[in-house]
Image 1 (tube, rainbow, N blue to C red):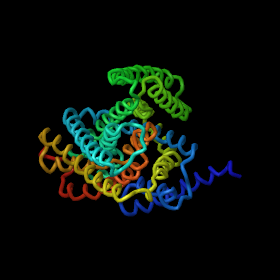
Image 2: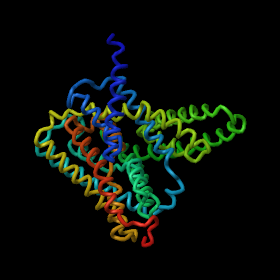
Image 3: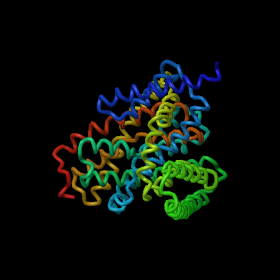
Image 4: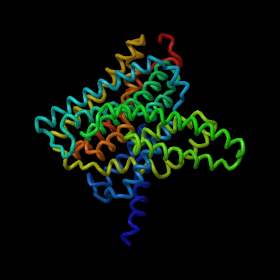
Length: 400
């Protein structure tokens, strides 16, 4: 009977994440918040009904890959090009300021002994990694919120979209570099060369895939389900090569694979299939698995204080960093505020980064709770703040 216990675990995860997701949706919050809470409630932090198992961990890893693959599929390359230099500047400052802010706060708390860490990496490297987590911006949550309030097609909305996409790419690259730094035998120069080599590999592979696809569709216009299978195989192979041959995070490979398929005619079909796969099984397991790792009873007064400060830093660093970047690009003061607020939400991207860091020994157990709280808080705060700052905003800004 114990062999089949995983069936009950999966049933409880799917049921609880959906129920709590619907509850949070009624309060005008993204359903990812409910999925996170489901893992926290069912896990060691509350009732202890579920624990993280090898099966859940492996399926969560596949869920991570599918999430980033879907993010690449949903990326509008043309819109990304339109944002140009402005989005790049906003994204760069939106990465640097949270990175520095998060690293400083974490370093202070670990170095003075307020919080102990069981991570294998040095204090400095752990602090830098927490800063990397804060660089993330959730494209899906931000876009969903802007669409709900009818402001996605404003100048500020387009800037947020472009900057958020670049922000995530920069964050993933930063994750790869910091993760490699945990291994002292690895040279940063070699790591950067591997990253460059990966992107060259990805471009060549994507070009070959696109050419082969055109030949395939010429001879096989029916049996569209095969296109979805081919796309998934391409995603998994690029993810595998990224991790094994180039030392780049597999989620980077998944995102790049999604970008290439997003410019093919099968984009909509593949997206529809993966939306079902992600919604039905993989996403709930991934988000719940993060919650299962949180052990709130271990959160001392110092950890609680650290969590509150980290939330404040997470919010202000994005508003200030992205706001300054927008102002430098001649956006008005109100538009700069809107862009900064729109970049606050960390969402699933921060969870993915945190999960990778924990596996690499860069994040101690005491820090997973505060990170989850940052994700939940920023996810809740973003839609609440976006509504008033966009109040009175026309569909298309005229003062950009």
